[in-house]
Image 1 (cartoon, rainbow, N blue to C red):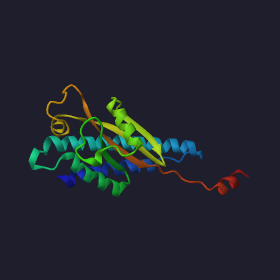
Image 2: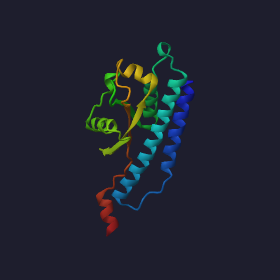
Image 3: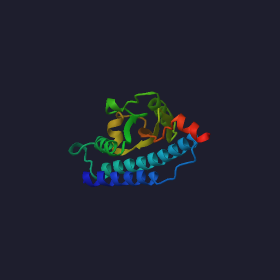
Image 4: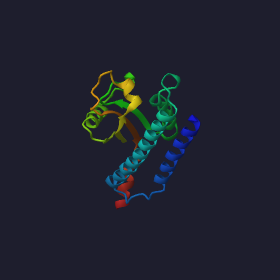
Length: 186
């Protein structure tokens, strides 16, 4: 079953990546190219988020049986690694307003810390471009079985709890040689 899920995820992401490669190159303005690359990355990140969220939900509700199975979020990390290897799209969980079950899920850098604050304040998404990488964090609502582990007994049941899913996609900007541009202008 894990192979089928992984195959479907890989196929979906490959199709999205292929579609973006077919898009026409913009005139030659770097700003326009950057805006288009960010838009493509945003659309891909939204799709990847939906795929991961749906997969996690299905795994949790259909296959996770407390002490007999791997925790779905941990199983998804195997999928994240495979997609990162195949597509160079990175994904990782961050804790937002519930207890982190893994110290590796604590927000690491300024972007992740700001994303956790934004999601905790009920903003569904947070995004930025840093060093040629589009980064997007979206909320994952913790429900039912998630809260059994992520919250202590007696926690306020009226507070909605979230985790975050951070997706990072390198932008593919062509670097133009300044000499070539100058020759084209003459």
